[in-house]
Length: 265
Image 1: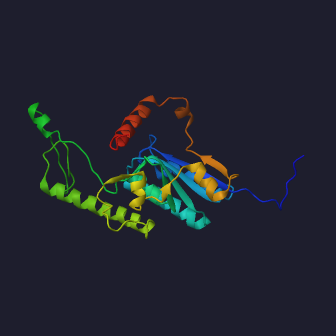
Image 2 (image 1 turned 90 degrees about the vertical axis):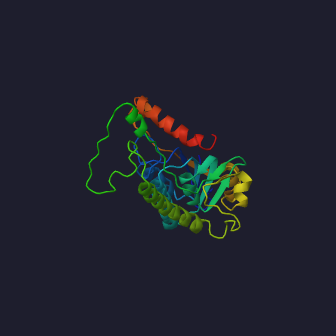
C-alpha cells in the first residue's frame, strides 16, 4: 500500500493555460476577460502551482479585452508570487502579443510570428453603391460627432483626423505596456512600434522574446523531469458541445480565419 510521506520531496507543478483565438468582447467564442476569468483564476489558485504557463496562439483583437486579460494575469501572478511563462505557437501578434507580454518570459518557435504592436481600424464605404441604386441615406443626430465614419456616407477629413487621434491614444497605451513589461530587454536601436512583425530568432534579437523553446522541454529544464502539468482550457456550454450553435460557430470561424490570414496563416 502506498503511504503518504510528509517529508518526501514534492514534484513541481505548473498550471498550463491555453489562450487560442481572436480576442473579442463578443460572446460567440472569442477570447474575452469574462470567458477566461474562471479558467485563469483556477489556474493560479488551485493546488499552489510553482508557475503558470500561457500557451498562446492569437492574432489579436480588442485592445480593452487584451488589457483586461493581461491585467488579471499580472494581478494574480503578483498576489500569489507565481512566475508566468508564455509559449507562442503560430502567432502572438497585436493583442496576442499584449497577452504574451503579461508573462515574465516569452518563448517562441523558430517560425512563430510576434509583434504587430500597433492599432488598426477597418471598415468600408458604400455611399457610391447607394447613390448608383437611388438609395438615400437619412441620418439625424444630436451632437455633430455622433455619426462619425458612417460607412454609408462620404468620408470626412475631420472624422479621419478624429479617428487617427483615437488610434494614436490606444497605441500609446499599448507601447507603455510593452515598455514596462519588457524593460531592459528591448532593442533600443530598432523601432518596434510600427506594427511590424518578427519571426522566431529575429523576435529574440528585437527583445520581444527571450528564447526559442517549447512548453515541455523548457518546463522540464526549469522544474525537473518530474514536473507535473495541469492543463486548463475554457469550458463549453452543453449546446456548444452538442454542436447546436452551427451558425455562430461558422461566423466565428470566418472572423478568426480572416484575423490569422493577416499574418499568412
